[in-house]
Picture 1 (cartoon, rainbow, N blue to C red):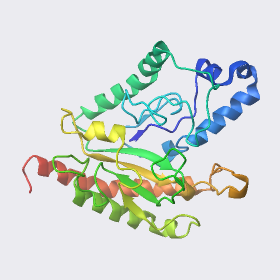
Picture 2: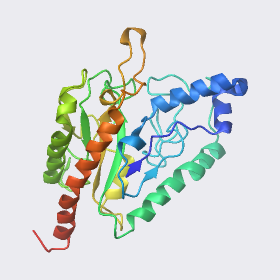
Picture 3: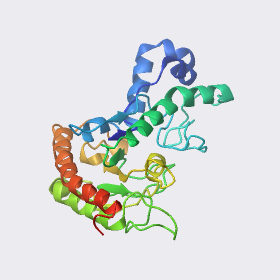
Length: 290
């Protein structure tokens, strides 16, 4: 289980870059930490908990370094960000990253996380991986689907909406037939709660609004000598966070009582149903079955 964006922690030196002299104001620091936690993928460590699985979780906010990006990825939504997803500045307007500062962040926070993933990927007892995320109900300003409603779940394999490769010669993280079976199992385990939750579309999409994920792509890429099958999965946050007052521009941030525990219980059952499918996939890759 890979959970890159569950943390809201920001080290003090980086918080000082963000807040300046206000870094000494405890209430301002706490408010910023809470805000960045909710701007990440809140509570995904709980949603994607699976007893007996190996868990690799991000220990710093994605606004310190985004562990689900390529190491050299730039732009507004790159590996190190100057703004949040609404485009609001995280630092003073005249702030600029130094080459040394960028290198230190990557070496201190990005590299150890991906080294841990690589060690796990090389283990024979790791059958497959799930890269766990949550998404806002509407596409944010810098998202690929700005202002558009999002499905209950998005399954990401690096392909098209049916799970096939986007172009001949491309790879996907799991075969299209397996991707469609994953969607069937999501519906089996979550459909009643999706239908009962206001504001959540009864929709399970493959590779929409996201078709690519840096971690998912890297770990499943056939050029990786230890590549394993797996997928990224996005929960719609409205499944577990209470709806804020949109007229007041309030975010979804307060958990629905009891909902995270219920969703995780269903997630664990979902994963248990997946295991035989990935066991069959492994056997198929060795030629024992077609």
